[in-house]
Length: 258
Image (tube, rainbow, N blue to C red; front, side, top):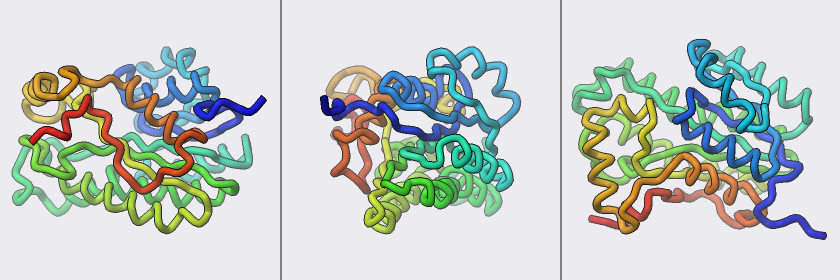
């Protein structure tokens, strides 16, 4: 019997950016596991260990690895482990972003050179670095996914510095899709609506942003980390094999409103 087109049985991959039970990375890892995938899940700081260890069973008890994407040795160790364990990769999910509080809460025109550089490095360029490491392991094609937000396309109050950074990330997805497509590697951005994660709480007046989205979205609700995870499964599965280079909105339709 042919495999179901949404099945990830036999697929192996990496999910990055797990911090706690509210993380989009957690929603993705759970959904990938439920679809049959095996994975390594990474976290960026030793402080996260006590929050993520209890989450293991819901993700199929994946191998958890510390991986600060600004530490090249940790990135190399991650892919060395994937190479030793499976000899291949089918997917990689990049779910991380960072900006210093001062730069995030201030005007874009006032952001520091150092803060802008760090935000771009962690939130955008790290996706390219991970993709470069993943490419040799995706011998039979694969899927690369990163997380964006509507503030990359339109001005969203208080999103500030992350708007230009996510715009660069979405442009990178398009160029990477074109470069890697001949090897059968598909590249996607998922753009979730506001989700009440710990990371989102760093955005000034985030609760007002969330309430506005809930009231104005066509479905009159917010989305969940599980919604994002199921979208990642679709894009990774055979069902999504003809899609690449785009941004998929998972926001209850909020992006269609002016």
